[in-house]
Length: 621
Image (cartoon, rainbow, N blue to C red; front, side, top):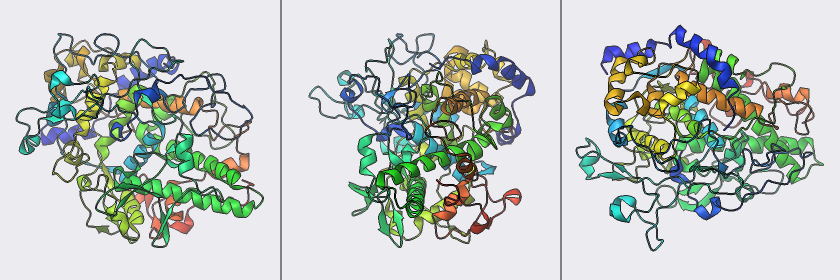
């Protein structure tokens, strides 16, 4: 793309006529029946194939189950961990059952790595209105609601194999590696011709009948703080001290880091951390977010224990978990979604939080389970926002020298220095994201999970390949689902994306019905007031609508066993991410009130003490 077109593309918004079409057709979307990454979660098929029965529930329970079961009292497995992803549209497989698709002319779909090279070069353009914390919050929430188990490739003798090192005629069914072009400008320097990729473990449990291959969500679907507490009873117990309602931690330099396990994450004697989600050690930004919320749990639990000396460990833990889950829900809908989707879609989909009173939108017929398209395509928009480095900042908001992201995957050595969590969190709040577009940092397209060899995996190619593995329907099907006109030719894309990108898409696919969702979604012009295009917006809005209206334990709900009192709810409504950072760090003495936006004129830094705290003393929590 030429540089002049580059900036033109950034300034354009979706034309008004398309918004009118979208809104006129939206009732059909609204009533549509409900139908990182997998590299870090392996699970045997035997676990996912076990007999699945409806859970036995007690509707009087005040607290969520840790695995998400019994949220819906009629469909007790909706949203439960280790159950299938939902599908807004039927799966799209070549044979109708489980084989990844091809083009309509019978040819293979375009090579995923070649698409990375031509469609997603590293051309950094900063977004002036959103901080790097916006990206980090999106990933934290994404890891709360979704995790894709990936099968291990095994040879004839059942030992683990590398698909790229095994003759093709000996590949097991789940080998689906990405082949690199012969003259790949990056990987050819390392004599690499193939990237490991295995298909997600299929779900075959009884109680979820399907003639098509389905994939399992390893986490609960709900925004419930499973990143903090886990999605299984085993992990939840692993993280608890069983004293005073506290989570385990590692005292260090006068503060508390996450608990450690025996695995190595970096040089000798640098151990991995434990948290509710097993991807916690992926990179220091994610470690810092997990640490922040572990500290917040323990801060609140300590106060509740002091205010309620008659409560035992279990009561303190569960009441704190209830509050922390509500805080995460509130920040997501108050601070994050409005900037992601823009005011028109927030209003249309009923995603606006109430300023007063209880919410009455809970609907037990709404299935909140995570959509496969949301998890495998639409909500992976956020990888485009990632900067090449997670900059550290001092308490005076001065940037510090910081390593490239590729050097920090599964490397926790940075946390051997006092105050590193604080510096990373301040960096996230001070630095801006990259624009949401089809330009990705090479730290993700060449150095993902770089093990010190100078190269890693390609995240864009991985996402494209995962969409094929999961049978994600093509872009045209999603346009129809979202009330947009079906494409009849590539010329029909001119009011949705740039001419340069249309030419690339036409070269890749040749037929508009072969265009895949993820690549097309990346290059759509943004919706008004949001940072993603209309198709991704539609899928994301539908999903968050379901997550709110299909959650019996949603924090705004009234009249239920788990409901807050009005006084308590009004305290939750005052929660901000900025104040959470202030309450759990030493270096953050001044911050901008809206943490997901940079400190600009309309969001100038203020002393932490001026931000409204969560008052647990006056509302009888």
